[in-house]
Image (cartoon, helix red, strand yellow):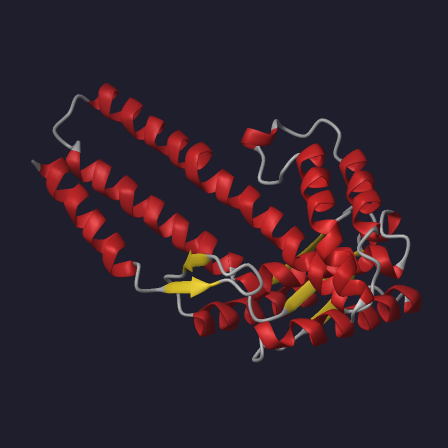
Length: 260
């Protein structure tokens, strides 16, 4: 009875939370957002400020100028999707990190290591477009929302199985955790990466960067991550999956590139 009651409460909560739906720009997909965007933006600004204090910022004039040019052009075409964004593009000094990330509200960082793979401004536009797309699509809010629902499910299961044998209960909780991660959280992470590829490719093309650079760029990135886990246990799609989807999107991106 406890389990049924807790489950019913969780379902009801999920239905109430469903009022917090967000339409993803460019794709039109409906996404669940349970956290106020201004709250996430405020938290992200504070975290980004702390990161700038704790991590060396690159003084390389070439890298900084390149990111500023590309970032400004990508932000300009993304502005209709995020009119209130406070864009900030920062190059952090760390050659060992071939990485970039974006935070809600418009904070975008690239590490100097990315320039080992991003050889041209077209390449960098693929990176920046992808990261800006994560922000515009609200993927951060959606990930937090899914984690909140998963935590709610775990709490309901914990309450509902309190009278079970401790060994059986631990097995059930472990199975739930694995199922939530592999069955929900990781697939959504991979979906977000694919969606960011799609939106980011269009941003890059509309900003005047050749979208065909994406194929070779992601091939080089894949070569940097040999030994990665299988796709079903990874937060990113495999190189082959990514390349196939980009090829499917390329005619639309090329049309946007030519008609900008």
